[in-house]
Image (cartoon, rainbow, N blue to C red; front, side):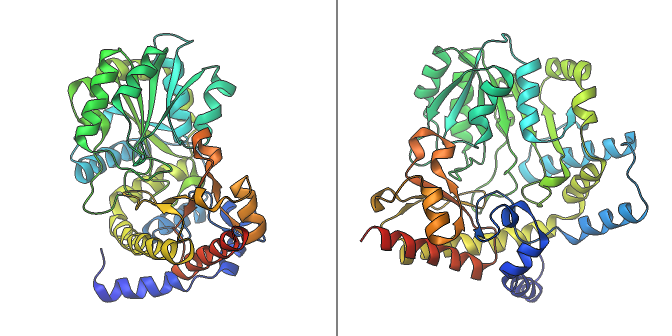
Length: 396
């Protein structure tokens, strides 16, 4: 992290970013609903780290738009392994790191190549990242078994046990959890691993939000907790959320046992060929050279996270809200307001704010909204003022 004066300057610069500036950039968060304040899709409003911008500018100026070369691929493998060792204490062999275009393609690869049966079910804790709700059935002909999470976002091992008993084989484990912001402890992960191992199941570990954990919490890679977890896990991650690189379409898959690695070596060509070379170099620079920028971002987001506590208490006093331990997503229960449904449509029309409707994350979450707080604090304040005004007016 930069020193106090430099961070204060950075904070002032980010605070000064305006809605008009963000709309002019034209990202989906601001262009999809051009007349609304964007707070839905999980990307931040603070651009990219200067080290990443510099290398991309150089590549563009040199017209480096050709195919990926082995040296660049190896650099990403080594950077990912080093990041996991330094940040989380899990020593990963660089040879066990592969490339993907995004995390969702990692689930596709897992279902295609790392399950025993082509008709086994996907176990999905809900609320969940929205595409995980429909893609298994629509794209890959897999039924899902939904497991409602506990109020704090944790996963009940007994409920998980029943899901395996109902025909589940692959658990989709998102940690930090989206949308609740829960960060699983080592003890929680060990308990999950015992259930999975007892049923001979697999785990697809989505760790895309792993760099975005707030002190005193710490991300624990699921596959690192014991040998059983390592034997049944496919881990997928990316710099895309923390360093704001989603459009560059690059993720990493980590294999924690030799059998899975051998399978990957047989099928890797097409999934790896879909990766953007610009995304590879951006992810590599993020892990190797942009850690200070990430520390500053987390400090800014942590300030916003505390501000959300105050903003909810002030503008939505009847809402129920739990401080997220990770991610930059606020998960807020508006059930006591009795607002018209769907909540997303009501808030868009009456408040002029685009949020994620909880109903889109699972059937038990229709009372909730997900609000992205990776935005300048003045804009974040306006978001809650608008939502509060609309909610309070409609529930009088």
